[in-house]
View (cartoon, rainbow, N blue to C red):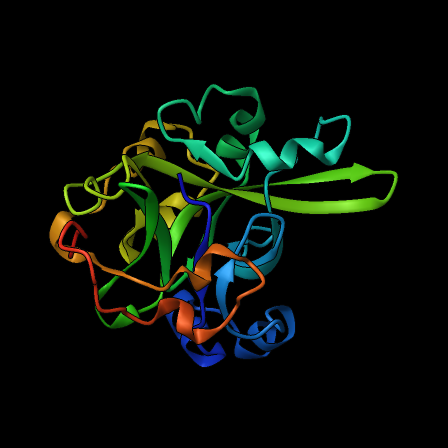
Length: 236
């Protein structure tokens, strides 16, 4: 699964990488750098504009609430959508067909099970560059108002991550962003084929401090490498 990640790219980089107007990036993504994004947080995403004319930045709550849900309690169970069932599971079926998005990130955390403890690792691209998870979003209207929320699609871990965890978020290459966002495609096999493990040689992983265990610790130290003091630590 993917239960915690970081997003600290500056607005000008976000605008450049995702082809967004810089003024909109500043206005919508006004929450600054994040080093410990947790479920129920407001997150930075990109989706198609409602008229289909290009992309727009969007603030979404992490934990998808389907438009048909009776209440928002389901969000705690829908932070991730499994690639194997995303086209069929009721909570994700409609968003997969009609409301796909990009969730922006500089890297994510996973916890490796070791004797008597769990060691957090930060997984990222070289130089912690900005990239995107495959996401889905939905709009729910309740008594307290409208909620726009999202989920991150996951798949089997690649060989780099398997010593740490058996699942990983789906990472999209920039050349596939348009394909993922294009919900007018009649053939869903095209977006489905993107839901695969990321190539082994394009990710790096390193142990980080247990500071990240508490969502309140939203500080740069969360992503800084630590020197492993145990020989059984996996080093990517």
